[in-house]
Picture 1: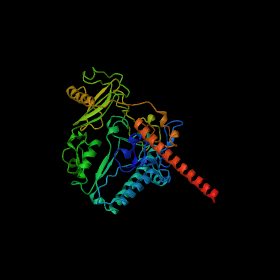
Picture 2 (picture 1 turned 90 degrees about the horizontal axis):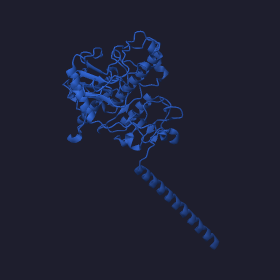
Picture 3 (picture 1 turned 45 degrees about the horizontal axis):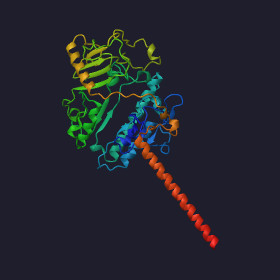
Picture 4 (picture 1 turned 30 degrees about the vertical axis):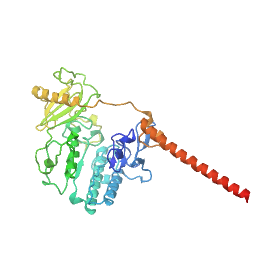
Length: 425
C-alpha cells in the first residue's frame, strides 16, 4: 500500500501492515501538509505523519509534494517486482483534499479561473492526472500492463467550500445526498470486453474485494458472508449487476432530526436517526441528511459561497425527516415522492430496520491525550497498548536489559582477569 490510510491507528494492530498489506508507505491521518507531512489536530497536537512500514519515514522524506512522492514509490515497487507474479497495489493519493497545495507550474495553466480555491483545485487535479499517466507508462515499461486492471475511484463527493463541485447533484461531502455519496470512477484494462462504455449499475466499494479476488483467480470461502458482489461482468460486458440494493449508512449518534419520530416512520423506524438506503431505482433518507443545497460550479467567482445569490436554498425541507426519490428518473433529488408512495417508504424502512439489527454497536470514545505526538517522539502513531502488548514489550525490555547487564559483567570479568595477569607478571 502507498498513500493515505485514514482507517485508524490507535494500536499497532490497526496499522496497514497488520491488516493484510505486505508493505506500507504513506500517511495515517486523513489530511496534512503535502510537503512537510505534518498535521495539527488542534493547539499543542501537532506531529509528523509519514511512514515506511510501522516506523516514521524520516530518512525517506525529501520534502516532496505527496502526489509526486507516492507516484515515485509506486513506480519503484513495480520496478522491483516480478511482473509474472501477482501484485495488488493500493495507491491512495492525498489529492485532491484540503489543504489546497500544488507546485506553481501547474497553476500557470489556470490563470483564467479567478476563484483561488477552484484554481488550486484544478491544478491539483492536473498534477494527479500526470501521476496516473506516469504510473500507466511504468506498467507498460515493466511488463504489467497487458494483464492489469486499473480501478480509479473516489471516496466521496466534493467540498464546494474548498474548490470542489458536485453540480448538478445535490449536497456536498459528508452528506447523504447524491452529491456526497455518488463518486466518479473508471476501470481501465486491456482485459475489458466492452471498452469505452458507461456502467450505470449499482456498484459499492465493498464489491471490489470479491471482484478483484475472483479476477485474480483467487478463492473465496462461501461462509465469509461478504457484503460485496463480483461485479466484473457488469463492468466488462454490460450485464446486469448482481447488486440490487446498498445501505449508504446508519448513524445512530449523529444529530437527531427534531421532527423525526417513530410515528413518522410508521412505527417501523425512528426517522430522527440519520440514515440512507438505495433499493433498485429508489432511495430513502431519514433524519438530517446534511447540507442540502444545489451549488453551481465556483469557477468564476471569488465570493464566499454563502453570499452567492444563485445558490438554490432549500426552504421547504424544514420540519421533514423522511425523503423518497426515484434516482434513475431524478438523480438531482428535486422531487420528493415520500407522500405519493407510502407503501414503498414502508418497505424501505423495513430494510433499514433489518440492516440495523445486524449492526455492531457504535464505539466512539472521547479524545485520548496519550495520542498526542509529543508523547511519541513528535510522530502520529499507535499509542494504546493492551495487557498482552505491554507484557510483550516488558519482556523485550527485560531481555535487552539482561543481555546488556550480562555483557557489562563479562567485560568487568575480562578486565579483572587482565589486571590479575599484569599483577602476576
